[in-house]
Length: 381
Image (cartoon, rainbow, N blue to C red; front, side, top):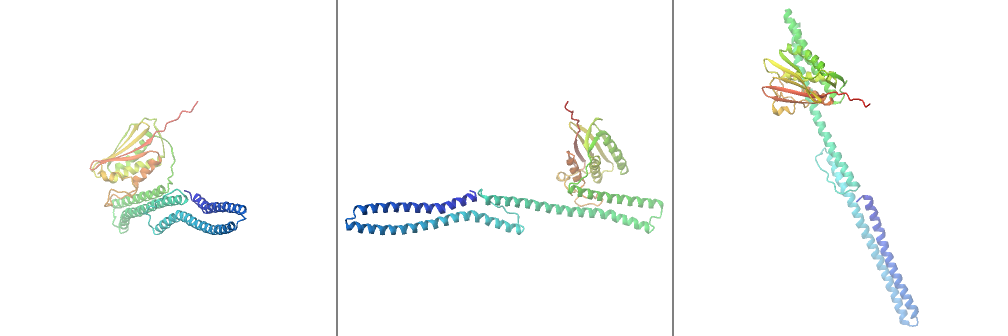
């Protein structure tokens, strides 16, 4: 029952019950007095009637006092009963709210605020419980985010330290005259260049991650012809993989006229991140990466397969999570911030597609991602 209705009912009980009793009593007294006066007038000749009349008046006065006393007692009892009823309906939820407030003040969010009833205080308690749940979720998310940020700083610091140390060592070698031949000098300079390229890649990943975290990825969507795009992409990748001694096998099964709506730069980031991950965990003397583009109805499906070390089944479900690394020992030869594949997942989701993987340890991994085809909608004539 709503608090307003309780107060109205309580007020009516406190006021009306005693008033009704008093009115009923007064009416009864009036009837008695009228009867006595009538009897007195008809029998005024007898002294005994006068005496009885006086005695009756005395009894009426006594009864009046008794009735007034009873009315007052009933009024007090009714007031206390109604007041207690209203107080309990207010005090109980206030005690719960105070207890819950103290728990939150002390940092304890692991409690449940049980609520009964449908009055205003019950609604307030339900809102408070909903606030507690959201506050708990927000606190847990903040803890996870803080942990991830610390892990990111640790990963980036670790992965920047290795190339910086190498660059410092080669620069000192040049300064000390260790690179005393043109061949050594060329090798030193190329190594320095490669290490600075690694650092630049890590910094770019960190910058892009900050944009992901604040949903500020700069997309420029346009129509892209699938065949032309992936032909150009493979041409660039082939040169890079050839230098690393990895064979690239390319197959495109999509018709020439198939078009998608995508951001070419970010789609290239997806392909590069997946292939970089394949290179990072390649453990075969003759590495092979296959890139296949297929037509699967309303979508195009891209498959990137390698013959690397593979991913264990326990790790496969988490490889697209931020900062997750299957390389628990953090071998410095592999490096990486642990956000490459999470970037892939985010970009694909923003494109309305999806990404997943299959893998067998010792055999290799296949990464899949799909994008919806662009189809012209005929105008109504």
